Length: 125
Image (cartoon, rainbow, N blue to C red; front, side, top):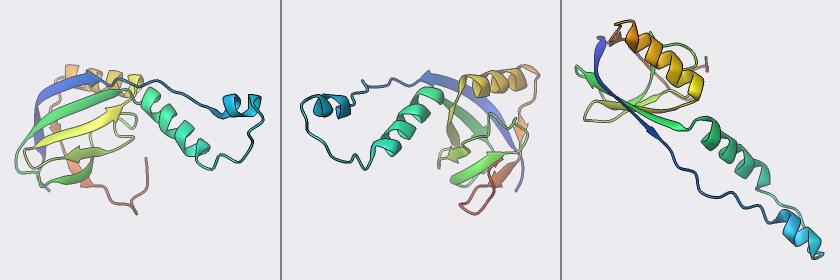
């Protein structure tokens, strides 16, 4: 696949809703049971708090929609992969470290990236 050039960059901080866990409330009143989805809810909450920056890159060039790794970026900036839409915008959720790495990379003047398709069988970096 031919390289793409980053022509625009936008960051938006995600807002998180309140985190309510009623387990202790029910336990206080003697209502017991097993909470089957608690682990998944806690994992989702952690990911929402840790990857709190929604980053959008405008890619020039002909890039088909899909999920990709941007090969030139650091591991932290590529941790969750990038989703490219039909209009050429690539989005990803980044942590504070990933955003810092991306800003450092962009400040160095580098703008060209090679896209590697990301599928379920590809190993995470």
